[in-house]
Figure 1 (cartoon, one colour):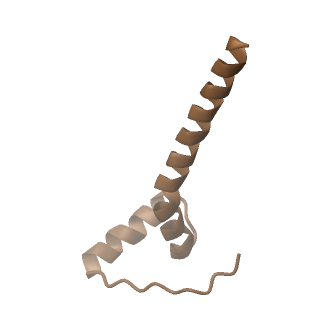
Figure 2: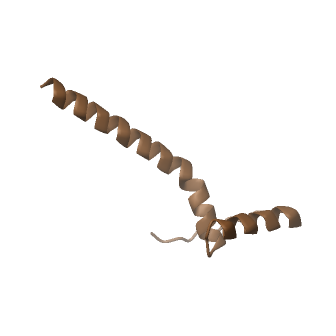
Figure 3: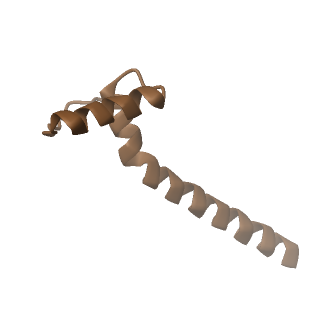
Amino acid sequence: MCRNRVVQVRLTERQYERFILRKDNEGYKTISQFVRDLMLKDDMAMLKLVQEIHKRIVVEKNGKN
């Protein structure tokens, strides 16, 4: 997927230091990947929940046949 959009955010020096510290502590090499993962984390959690619900429905349906 082509990444061609740029997002700019202003932070205080303290916010930036905390941001970089968290990025480093979580093992990210780039700010971009860290931000993308933070933004998509909730989406992935929701996807896993939907998949689990679907799996349970299929198992229950197959058990009744």
